[in-house]
Amino acid sequence: MESYNFDKLIDRTGTDAYKYENLKSVFGRTDLLPLWVADMDFETPPFITDALRKRMEHPVFGYTVKPKDLWPAVTDWIESHHGWKVKSEWLTFIPGIVRGIGMAINVFVKKDEKVIIQPPVYHPFRLVPQANHRELVYNPLHENADGSYSMDFENLEKVADEKCRMLILSNPHNPGGIVWDRETLVRLAEFCYSRNILVISDEIHCDMTLWDNKHIPFASVSDEAAACSITFGAPSKTFNIAGIVSSYAIVPDDSIRHRFYSWMEANELNSPTLFSSIATVAAFREGEEWRRQMLHYVEGNIEYVIGFCKEFLPEIRPVRPQASFLVWLDCRNLGLNHEQLVDLFVNKAHLAFNDGAMFGQGGDGFMRMNVGTPLTIVKQAMSQMKTAVDSL
Ligand SMILES: Cc1ncc(COP(=O)(O)O)c(C=O)c1O
Image 1 (cartoon, rainbow, N blue to C red):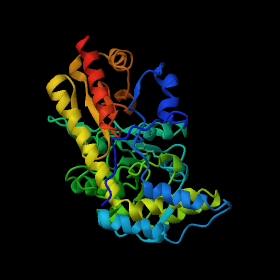
Image 2 (cartoon, rainbow, N blue to C red):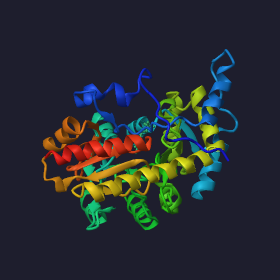
Image 3 (cartoon, rainbow, N blue to C red):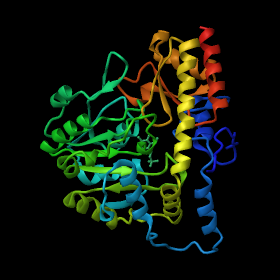
């Protein structure tokens, strides 16, 4: 069995990497360890680069049809990993999940209708509806005494009025790394189905559950869930190919599917690019061993962060993620206001993390750290954090 090397440091300069090139414009300086944007610093696995390279050997890159194995590769993967039987005809390519959210808003939410989100949550869930001039309704997550999160159904009853047409679900949830349990998803489906609210279930992080956590696809939990939802997925986070853009939508309900897919077809937004299909098939047909080893490595990085904070930075409490490579750091015990906290991380610790406030209500006092990077970088980041906190 091949053993993959996640310790390898890869110089990304000169590749127009977003997380490096935007340091100056976002943080005001460039001398920062960039552990923010959610891609990983690991090498894209060789079975993907080999498949792309093989196609590059042919000198013509003309218009292409979908490879025959594209949807079987996706449906086989979903069935074997998540126990959900997806029919090929339920699937379509989408040109990115954030774009998918934008398209779904334009198709399903009228100008005077509203979109529900549950902060703290991935910020485009707020930015995309806002940019499309749709009103947002907030149902903040409930923070439990042990620091974990639950959905607040009592508040949802209160805030959801008859103008609410869509709820955007992060499943698993970014930034908290929450793997939603079946009971929560069933209850959410009952609620949304009964009020004619379409659930957009963004499952981009679903193939990265950690330890013994198990992802449950929203649409698989009940007939109601299947009848009121669009699921978005992609191999892009798991296999570190975000730049290739390889997302898909799954819509089991005939009428929702017809409405959404005919609009996409009319605008030619549903055709995969040449390289996205090749990368997707390679990832889902050959990627299981790499995925397991990558997640095992990420678990080690998370344990390091948790252990380090416990020993040297007790004021910072990492929320142990149940999925993905993002660690939500509760820094409220440092007693700093928002400006001071950002100043501490950026100007004293020289760390580019996502500032929790950007994820909306409940995010203040938190920082999101990306540990999809070699352990030496994680160690360096924690040491820089300690030096900065010690200087307070
Ligand atoms: C929850 C979530 N959805 C979507 C995306 C981005 O997806 P895409 O690049 O396909 O738009 C991210 C990236 O961080 C994410 O965390």
